Amino acid sequence: MALPAPGRPGRTPLVIGLRGACGYRPEHTLASYELAARMGADFIEPDLVPTRDGVLVARHENDITATTDVAERPELADRRTTRLIDGREVTGWFTEDLTLAELRTLRAVERLPQVRPGSTAYDGQFAVPTFEEVLELRERLSSELGREVGVYPETKHPSYFAGLGLSTDEPLVAALEAHGLNRPDAPVFVQSFETTNLVDLVGRLGLRTPTIFLMEAAGSPFDAVAAGDGERTYAWFGTGAGLRDLAAAGISGIGPDLSLVIARRADGSMGADTGLVPRAHEAGLAVHPWTFRAENTFLYADFRSGDDPAAHGDLAGQVAAFLEAGVDGFFTDHPDVGAAAVEAWSTTG
Image (cartoon, rainbow, N blue to C red):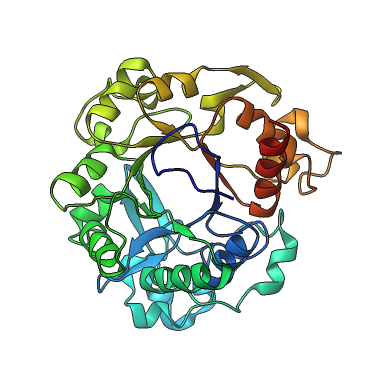
């Protein structure tokens, strides 16, 4: 599968293995990333959070209560606490309270055991990987598979971590630089839910890779909230003016919630195309929506199969509808289905 020029719309759509192939393995483990690449993902996607000693590790959240066996470790019981993260109180165990050595004693577990009981067979088998290990895996898989496997890191809660003196940004840029990936044509996208974070990465720290602004279905980015800017909501960023603002800031594309591209009706069925993709393309931005998952509970109602929320429906059909809407790539928990859907669409289209 040919890769598009990063950040430029109109090429073969990219398959991004969200947290690896987390429909089949516990998320953000080397096993999950490797499976995603072998299933045909063009990119593997690590979310990055720091340890207490400033090492970047791959976890979807800094709260590791649901994704590791930390709650079963009596020696770490006293680390359970409550933190205010992006304006919301969260109680659990957090990476910023553990050193890398302490985190290494833990093992990953399936975050959604009711929906993905098959993945629980792998509970306890895998460690929490560092970003360095993810980059080393990317290099090995690119060599073994004979194609460039990309990496698509997200800076999690950048304002929060900067306030703790544990910024993810400097070590992220340093790691990319060390691996020869800090360049415009590298197989890398750096993503964030905060525009100021992306602008700072490029302007102050010299990040040269394409950048993606992530967009929730509702609400506002936390950096806008913290600044008291009530106008720069996710909805505003989806307007022509908002998209042009992103492009003018040097951002390469957007990663919107699926419903921002094709509306989801109240009954869960697929609604109208919102026009976000052509508006973004007119501004010169790529569009990589999230998240495509095979289980009925996550699918638009049109593509569900039966009444079991954990059963797999027609994910390929849902992907095809978004490909027809013109997206340039997409995040998926099931990269094998995503890759097959892109191949079928490319052949018939």
